Image 1: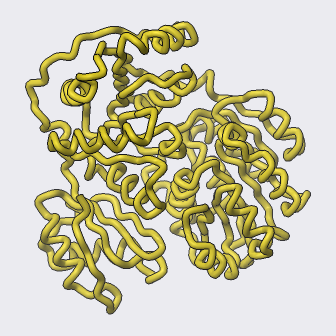
Image 2 (image 1 turned 90 degrees about the vertical axis):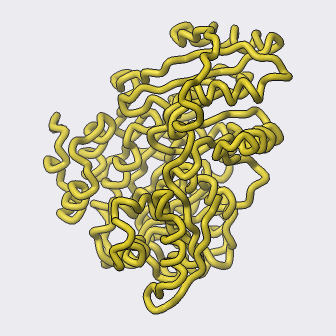
Image 3 (image 1 turned 135 degrees about the vertical axis):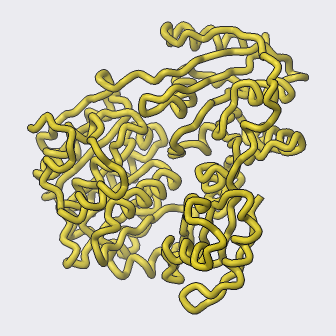
Length: 461
């Protein structure tokens, strides 16, 4: 196996190599360097790697390299524990595959109409990315045909087990050909993962990069609060230590909604992510946070599963979680890819036992008690620089990100570097633009025909 970290040393399709350069992928991450050679050779791989390590590109490039695009059969199946993660994985696969013509990648998750998914599945996508429950439902209905499957991927397998998907996984295996490549990626390696690997894999190459990965550089602080001043103190710590992207964890969805309402009254652009939102609402919340048109996301642990937003500046625990493991997952959202991060926890006297349990379980956590400094910068750091515009057309209308970018920049009144992330879903899309161009962008998207048709556009706040 080559020790080089250059993608050009791999036997990848030329289209993939050229696209990687365009995407700015220069060197492989550790998990990519260790897993891609055996992946490309068609071997089974059992890999342990942290979230944010580049594992999606690892199994994605291996899967895409072995794919026969001329054969309109489902050749790859990726299972994820949550629909948010499935959507993110499918989006990343499309980015990696954008130089390969006529490739079809479909996300199949709960929360979307079965009828629409059934219609799309009848055209045999090359790759299906989905959650176990919905994929199994389509398999039982005879809608998904896996007889030509080449590569089966279990992403975040440990969390799938934690969420009770073992029965669905066992049922899906009955539809999967015995002759296949099976890739299993996990952040932890409990006994149940070894048992799963023994059941679904054949002589896997075992890769564990968790000990070799650079430890996260996270400054961990806790502040004493009371029940009465918790909201006000959260606002103070946000102003003192927050950045452009801040994630606030609450233990209940009721607290999520109340904290979001409080921060919004204080003119902080805050949005909530919890179990009462439907899929369209969840998509909008995640898009607005990831494209930097909202500075604070308040979420429960369940709702945040699968959330993979890069460059989160700080994580705030509105309340400490009851288990140390959950605390680790929370603060691990910041300080990724060698960057520094900040984690701040609010603790009442009655919650000190939780802090003590975390310190016992994590002796290297270095949680330091600090007073909250008065912020001199006001809310400047918390004011998002982008605005999200929703358009009433999406992938079903054959729209592509380039179509929306062209509609915004063709007249020369909006510079290309003022346009941020463009996210397209089946029947709607979102565009982020710098604040000063928001109204102009909304008018152009509404007034200018895109591919011969006009769409409604409105600013989302």
